[in-house]
Length: 602
Image 1 (spheres, rainbow, N blue to C red):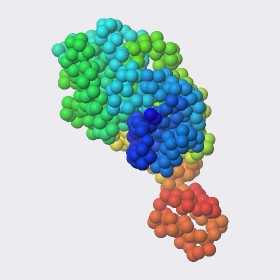
Image 2: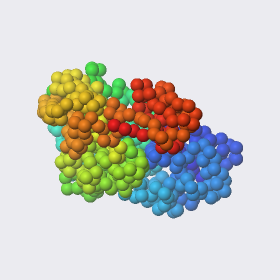
Image 3: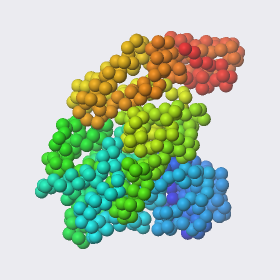
Image 4: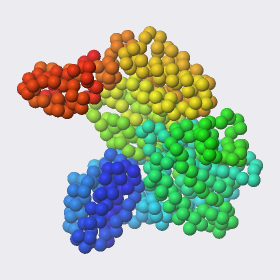
């Protein structure tokens, strides 16, 4: 029996995966073919969704860009006639690797996208795109909960913490604090009740690591929470996930119920007498709730606002009890570390930053999606060797790393090694793992304005320096992008940025200025051009440009028909003119013109 597996993570569903599933179902009934039709999460190649995999005695074949029409062709060729349809193949393996047990360490040997996978080392993502995330049996076949069994049956809590410390894993949520140290602090606190919390409040623009992990392999996070609870003495756990992740939350609920049925959760875990219960708290989408004390406030039913520290959560956290908070990716590593040993994890990475890191490749990159690399790879290798370079083919200009709390790293620094220390030297941070790629058409002043607008609107308002300081900075940036900048604006931005960094209460405010500081550091000429020359070098700031029609115009009228505000006038076969007072500078006319007659001027 042939198996057809459909990628139904958020990216696959958004691209039309459910329609492809219905088509394949209909074809199987129509042709009376006995097939097994399953589903999986995102395997990382979001840019190729919808994707389907066909597994049979000949191996595994993954097809990409599969719409309903392509699904029919693939079904007829591969399922009916046993002939793979080459034009849609993105990955293939000739040997018989169709059993889930042998999938864990499978190596792809062909396909147009082999290079996307070959440079990765998948620890967190080892089961994503491989299992049905709603089947605990699939997860167990690929070693889920073996780390838990080893921990509670053959290790003391102190030995578990020591193993996590030896692995060298740092918190993958952005701060980069050693996870084992956090566990050790929480374990040392004495109390009648302790809590362990998963921070799944992923809110960075362009970031989707946590969502994809929870959608593709929720059991990895659940296992990490149970092991962590055992290590620090917590019997209650929470997963704080934003409500905008309905698929992740639904699959988490299914996974929790399945884990309870298998005695991985509950009052008698695997017959050992250990107790651990897990709850889901849906967040309302406030970015500040990614800060651990604001998250705690939200779980307690209060407005999400950071607390003054100390005391730290390890001493007094959720409901006043000692608590430990780790993010999704950190916890998803734990089962693997305990199962295979700290040394196996520490074999990857650099001297100061061990293991692997998951990144979301977004922006103007050819192969947008999810990748997991050994720490120590360079930015250039990730963007060009794995990501395929810029989608436009234009020169790479910069990458925003670390989200709104991170910074813009220029092309001149593309050989920077990806580890916590090296990235900090550039003015950026590792962050939770967002990488937004930009090409030569991006205006870095406008990019700074965009990210500061995000953090300013997400400020909780508790700190004057954060709420008002970022507002003043945003006002300056908005003036600059409108051509209203004045001498001294750059210096004023830097002064405000450093004051906010020093005086803000939480990480949101302390890092809010990073995009501004890094763009000034590496792209100061663009700021100067906006302020002194009233020009945007990339023609992205609408207030500083005009759309004009040149004598190349043939009078075809297409631009006038496409203009949404009727700003273009002219007769058939005569030169057209744009009414600058009506023009909204949307660029539709330029995109529509077949004669390259529409140009942008300063």
